[in-house]
Length: 189
Image 1 (cartoon, rainbow, N blue to C red):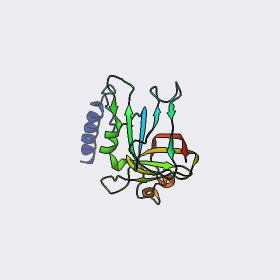
Image 2: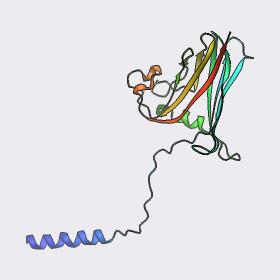
Image 3: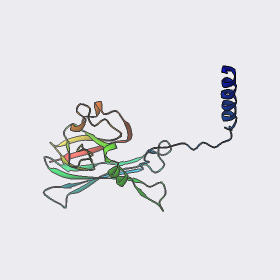
Image 4: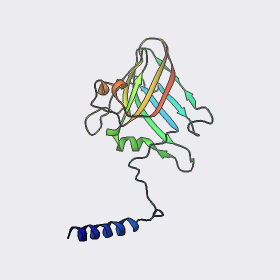
């Protein structure tokens, strides 16, 4: 009886194994493709003078490698507050520019911007669906006069519950960097 059961199981196993062909196509599952960001515009509007608008711009239409990106910094007025708005684009096809800002907004729990500078501070003005910061809308305080560098980093799938992350410290954020740009800033008196 045991031999008969073993024989039946062997035949079933052989039939199952032989029905799979190496030529059967396998479609990979891509849960969330990385966003291609060729352009970052960070528009800063002086909270007390709406005519004082500065746009920090990063453009790299050919992506990593190839030509160097174009980075345009700006001048801010010392000790002034600016309202910041982030815009991300994929401009690899000029006939079909993709607004990556919308994707980041739709997947806000999977993204967070981080800002670092010597005398400039940035405060988050937007929250994701879990009440954690995102950074598409911010308040920037320019600080004292002098030259500075504002580094902006967008992290994909950060651990927003890790120590300091919700306060803008990316040391424990983990995740992957979608884009990181350092802008030269001249804070003027």
